[in-house]
Length: 319
Length: 305
Image 1 (cartoon, each protein chain N blue to C red):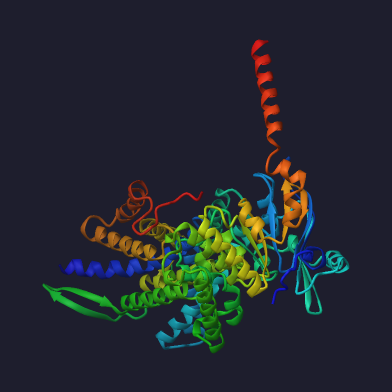
Image 2 (tube, helix red, strand yellow; image 1 turned 90 degrees about the horizontal axis):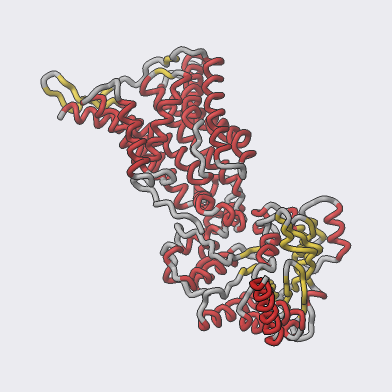
């Protein structure tokens, strides 16, 4: 299903699924995201990295409808890349989405949060896990299929009376949930409360829940946070399989550089809300601006700075 | 012993009515964290809808079968009460969502006054009677001339309440709608991110709460035979007490709380003083809030981090 990206094929330029243009997010006087533009390639694993407070999660919140951006355009293209003309057309007519033939463009900044998931098919997970802890593991996955089930029941109470079409949909939903539980290794715990799972399992369940809503773009906020090296390795395998078997494009925020460099096709680096680098992992790794901002400046510079501070403190004490 | 059994029957009947109203309080609190003070008046409005519908059916249309009339009254009252509560949510609470916490509560108090006054002006301030219906009783025990009776009305009330609660439990626990409702209760924002239309789900909660209150309204009218524009207040606050006692946000808690309040009230009236029955019921509210703030079946409040 997904095209396996050969090295050098820059899908985010040739076939972007998400086009972010001039995104601004202001909180009062604070500019958390400042004129950010980047593309996410279809079928790519794209990593959004940057030091703490760089605005990565804010970008995620804008993409998934959690926040309304102060300014900017977020165009999500279903099936094939949208041409700039198509995106402009959708923008101009003031609609939230525009279908052209078999393809469709969704302007995410205009969609209410529930339609970002339900129609535009963007799913996300959270840095601090947000499972429905009082529900069972299986129910968490069923909730994510609410829309499919409601469609099957004709948005009415018909589902309650067990019409055949609804019965089929309910079975399909359970099957899908079972598939993902098996995939993340939680099948035996299907009927336990989600809150009782260990941390690593909760992270996997959150990914499984997101996948149950049939996303075309999966946004993962620090999926490897708090995982041990073995779990981290399993996560890499899971993400690769999601991309390969389900054709879902993945956008992730990650601090674990081993994960980022290992699995991503494309890396975007943020610092203070602006983009400072954008390219293949190799290109980004050797970008001096990234090294300076993200990995810190070199040791000599740190020592120099230390000496300077000492000087200031001493002159301050003397005066 | 005879008095005890008789009061037990009376208390369970009254408690069923309180329990049905309490579910509306507890569901709304669970999903939007608001005490819907207008809910008692929605219950009163439903009793008036039932009254009007019953009189239309029996006098204008001339339906003689009391059970048929009651069934129609029940459906009509549930529908129109649900519509009323849907409109109230749409007009008075939804625009205030995202405002400070007290705002929808104050709006609810306003709606409560509005409903009571509207009924007072349009229906008159006096008690409105319905012709007595289903007066038959079953004599369970008889000793020294004191009869322990179980009225058919009481049987209907208890059976209908049990059946409705069963159906309601199925709706919340087993259907996709119920799952969405519970998901919104736990984390509205996350539910929205999974494609659930939170506004629709909240509307649905108000509709279900009102439909159950309407059942309580019809049964209240059938049981007492009169209704008054001010009748929303005291049963409303008692049902709220029941929701708090059972643990606000907990559905089984609302039913348990309703039954307990009903029993406490009737036993207090029988053994102590009938004048102070409301004082007894409301003292429970204060005692619960002080010593058992999470209620009997409520989850302890865990601050979200």
